[in-house]
Length: 174
Image (cartoon, rainbow, N blue to C red):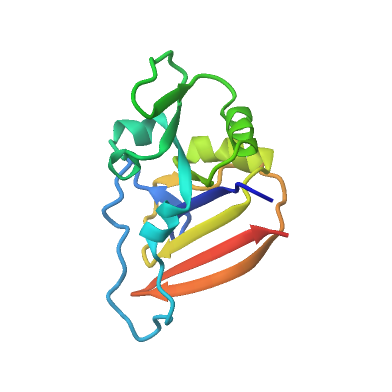
């Protein structure tokens, strides 16, 4: 198939990807390792297999760029902002831009977040893999991963990793 669009993020048990204020300090395990799987999640290996990162303006403003200096970064925004270095601002149809990018030669595309940006990709049904880390926390409120009125998307569980109470599920489209 070539390049894949991969959603990779952590959620609380009740489905939030960040607190109301965008906080993510709750994204930690519970320290219990008795259920750990032999295989561990390797974020560095994941990053080695991607060369494009897509994020919303809030993630950009929270300065999530440090891991992505060697990657092409697209930032969805409603403003007209000048591109610089490896950062490309998209004011318009971000899904079409990323579908164009997927046609080019290269590694996979990391759909980083946040929820409003991701919602466009879910509704367009163009995410190839969903890697969801379920954090053993109920936040009670926050920024949800799934917004309303999504299409039905059938997935296949390809891998399951448990590490200190965090369950990482890797799904591909059926």
